[in-house]
Image (cartoon, rainbow, N blue to C red; front, side, top):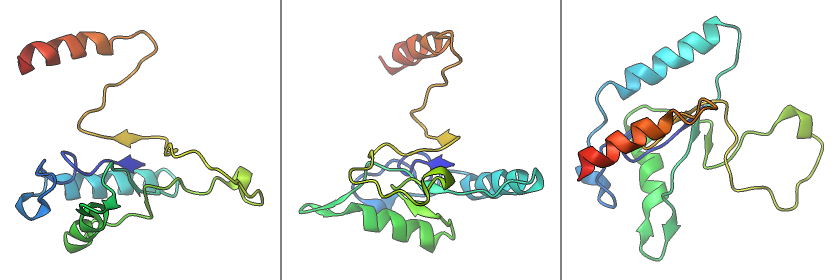
Amino acid sequence: MAVDFDGTIANNAFPNITKAGLVPNIKTRLVNIEQYILEHGFNPIFVLWTCRSNNELGNFLDEAVQYCKNNEIHFDYINESPQHPMFKNIKVENPSPKIHADVYIDDKALNFYGDYRFIDYLEEYIKNEK
């Protein structure tokens, strides 16, 4: 399960994370998702999936990770795909930067159902943003 940070866990306040409050009910929702997955016999793996990085402008990724820790939100991986059992004994020289997950939780996400219904949502979103 890949979970975005800005706008999904913390209210959008990039880059100043000290002004960011938790998105309402995010902790409860993540716990409920984890419980549901466990109850159905699967092992939930949570990945913090964010565009934040550490660079000469600041330690934006470290700040997001610490923010999650301070708010008792646990992640198994940070911007990294879990090792797929199929590739357990294979060393990959240049792994893809794309995170692999079965579910992505992101405030900017659009669902793709194979028939492009998300375009209707996108058109509505654009109208409301103007």
